[in-house]
Image (cartoon, rainbow over all chains, first blue to last red; front, side):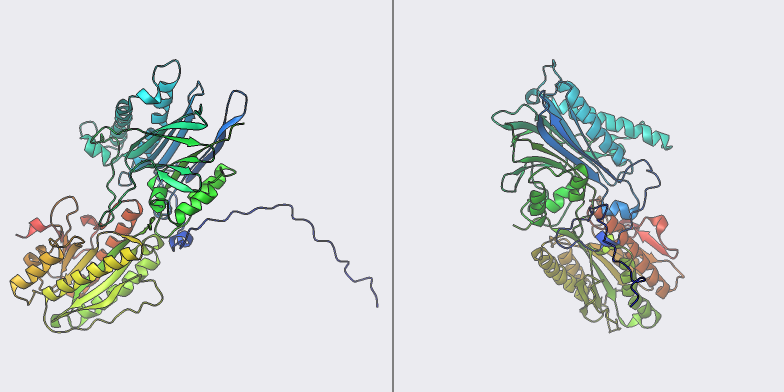
Length: 328
Length: 237
């Protein structure tokens, strides 16, 4: 036999790349998860579909105090109908390094400009809080004038709304009622101030919510502890009325104080996650408790977690999470 | 405790199959269901959260399509046939029973249920005694915690005043509307147009639910098909 033409088996080369990205599903993903074709919003080319962050906060000795993950993901419905993501988040540390301030906002969907309200509420609100808390100011989270802050943020949203409406040719923009402005531009918001100097291993957290954006502490053992009332508890039929700025809250919102220690996580989230999380005792609660028992490796991974598919839950999803790092 | 419940909007079509519906009108009535199936097939966001059911009524009322996921492969669409008189009372009583048991079942199955929506299509006057159907309607609406949003739709010989009294809620921020065939319109075509309104309402409602709002949305007046007019309860007193 002439062996000269027989192919010499070449060794299979080691693959030069690895890795994969696959959507998370919790229970029945529904039809929308696989069938929705995301389309852009022609009025919002610069509004990103997904934004995310993953950072560590360091102490003076360059040792990590905490890990922060954040992401805001456009919901399947906004992708399907070609409208922008209406959620927004922000976080910033006071320049003296003492506090981390987080803002999470959810634009009210009926308002075409509501994503702009969410941007103001999340970013400007956090900025105002951080500035006010920076030493040597006398303000601390314990004596913080929350009603003034809420009023200031509401005023900024209202002004922006009037400006935008006027620019869009609405002749009544400057004289219409706040309620009419709010029909076009409104947002819920949740702020957290985390004291980065732990006391007895735990960080004190002050929370203030206007509307149904919710704060949770993921305690050890995967138990979700809500820091405000769970929506629609005990309601006969599902309803979704919300309080949103620039409309002033009926009563001054009351800050909530809690603590978060190493082994736990503080999570602020819009109702796009809060609704499927429910009381945190179902499949979504178990899923998020599993994947967030430790900080995910990256903001990208965190964004994939909050973008999980579950039938009928297609709202925008936004979360900011804070994991204290165990101190030696 | 079960949490994180999926949200559902139950949508009912309640349709008159009295003797006067014979012919093209019945043909168009039968075309509504496949049209809804087509619309849902193209709208995955919506089809994940709408349940659809059909009740017809003549001398009596019957559940022709139990509330279901229309895209479920096990669903068979019924063929509607005409039968006798026009008992609004029978339709309202059966609808109340259905909504009560459907909502109960959906909640037991772990869903959050939005207020049901009802499109009520008739081409004639009720043949019940006035007090009978009005009592049955009150039991379906005022005396019922899970009352539906009712959108009456009239074609042909339907009496606008009678139908206007079926708009529910008739006032307030979530007031419903009534749709009427305009004079000179072909009644069969009008039924097809009402089907369009029903579908666009389902689509808009699904979109609004997706954005966190509650329940039923009706199309804007300028988006209505030519030949159909929209009315609030104030328009006919």
